[in-house]
Image 1 (cartoon, rainbow, N blue to C red):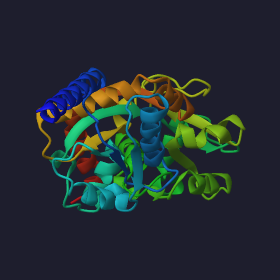
Image 2: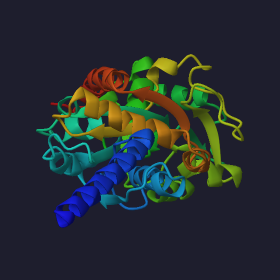
Image 3: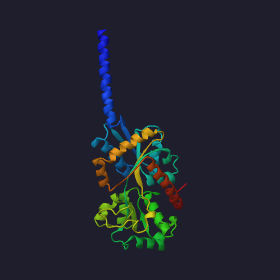
Image 4: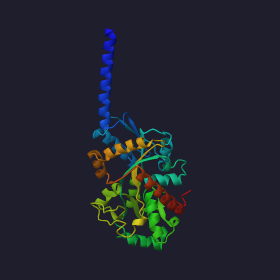
Length: 329
């Protein structure tokens, strides 16, 4: 009897301890209670990888959650190889994927991906990374108007470069060409695998003009090797003497990509809100704010269905532009 009584007391203490721990966990957040996996559907060192590792770093370094977060890279086909793998994790809120809206939508359309973003659970749009249109410092083009005048007069004479085939850079150039009455298929655009290749083409004179993220181009702009003619952000970029496309009356032609996070299909509304809550905590940390500054990203918080709406709108925009380029379905 004494043994049973002691056992009962021990059990009561154990349950009490669990209850206290549970209340403490709920106060911080019941989710996440185990390790997270964050997929970057691009190469190590790229923008998606940087974002994924920034989120993982904020979770631990700024003590957002007391769990590990591992980053997995699955590059290829504009992110659609990773997307196909990610889509298999239905109903699992511990699987997350970073992406850029226009870049991935371009990959989906041009690669005829069987998986579409509308099938997944939108978590949040986090940031935008402004792009700049640049020319070599010795270029005769002093402003965007003169460059577009040359393209209008003789489309193939202006050799553009920057980013992947069907990516936001090429889509922006296609929009600028259309505004000048130039067919998208007439554009002379050389796709690249990254900023380094874009830089080589520009600095060697093999390309007339380029479009890439400010983060990729800033060092060469500040060194005087490249001249920025315009940026696609809402506001001017600090440190760059370049007008926005909006200022030049070309805001509608800019294809600005929204970086964010998706979860697999099949999450309950409660699970979706828990993941959104976690990302909301991440974006408010000093760790994430340092990443924004370091990478020239501008915060653009669009949680849940707001993010889903942006993706749907840009899906239509991307499909139309890539259709004009002959890259659509």
